[in-house]
Image (tube, rainbow, N blue to C red; front, side):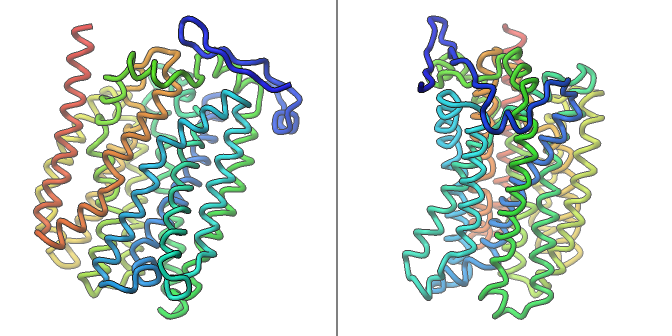
Length: 449
């Protein structure tokens, strides 16, 4: 008999009884207590696999796609085209969240997560098999765009509620510490992706790299997704996990109702970490494109520098947990937004300052990124009423990525190439101002309420 979902008079979703003999649940069934540390491991594994996919595509957008999908135009224009398609995933992500939440309502969490990660793996592996423009013409660009949209939809659908559950089940004096654990997936994913591309660039000549070498990171991404799927299902499919989600009311809710009731919280949540999300691509993707286009530096060596920066970011993320537990997550975000605003003024001097200036920009930027990004996820999720927290946290994350990061490489490279690096400073500064405005509004509303 098909499952049915009904909406009660209070707007909450009433779910059908779960079938305890479902495949994934039966395989991994265990009813023991799930500690915050175990949830944290699931969060780190899941996010690291997603970020690896993310950065494999981002690095390929700089080093590969302009040559093989946009050979009909210059290197700058080809990179801008690639960055445009790069943004498609962030545009598609909220739609994926909504679509897969319906799947969760109709079936269960395991089905939703499995389908989302299968779609992510298929889209990522599909890119590895794409014919180039020389073989297929404009249709190759269409297929690349479809695969990128598929990645975005899948990333939205892969939301499993683990970060919110982790934050709610962590000790009250350790919320900042546990919040930062999932953010470690970003530097881990970047280091793995950059290291793989650096190895290929160092061992292959340019012809072999552009012909077939660039495809290997996408194969690896698919394999990592398979491992991550089983690791996350092992946790998500337990009855204890379901019980914890049910107790915390972490279930999908009616989006229209939530928007009317929690609209201001969605807006504040999307903008609160804007500085961090803007900086995210301005120290990873943008400088790589700038060096590739306007510098004679070795790309492989520059990737090594960025890997070192990512290691510093990982340290910064850990430190952010200690700072946030001492001074508060929102205060930490506000202070880092001010520091990012100050740092934005040095972008032209450092990026135009030769190898030394660029090195300082990368290492300092990654340090600031780690400290701010460590507390960027769900800093104001507590604003949501309990029944809206699951959907609200997912959509807030999607919108934060869309507003803060989706177009950052495109805008930064386009502005710097046509008007100068000073405009990159203004772009980053606007992100810092947006964060401070959102945090100030959040404080004012809390005092008023």
